Image (cartoon, rainbow, N blue to C red; front, side, top):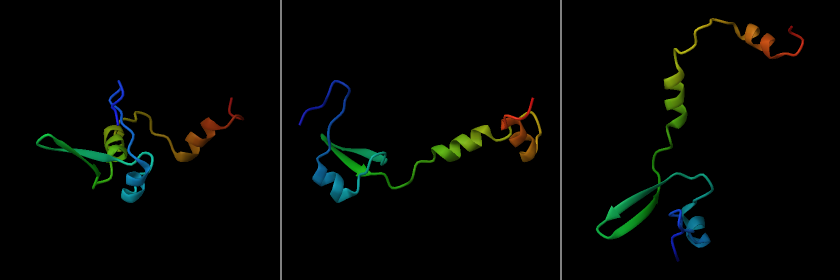
Length: 77
């Protein structure tokens, strides 16, 4: 098995199936001397929560849900 110029390597299907590594599964790399372990990440990614926390309080206009929906409809001039 070889590493591509982009640093990618294909994980054999048997290993992916055994570990339940589906597309978009988060993984961790662990160094142990000159050995690298690939592990399924234990904690789910927190990206969604980080984005919400970052955006919280950034709105400058107070609008109701009905007002926002009215803006998205084509019948509004």
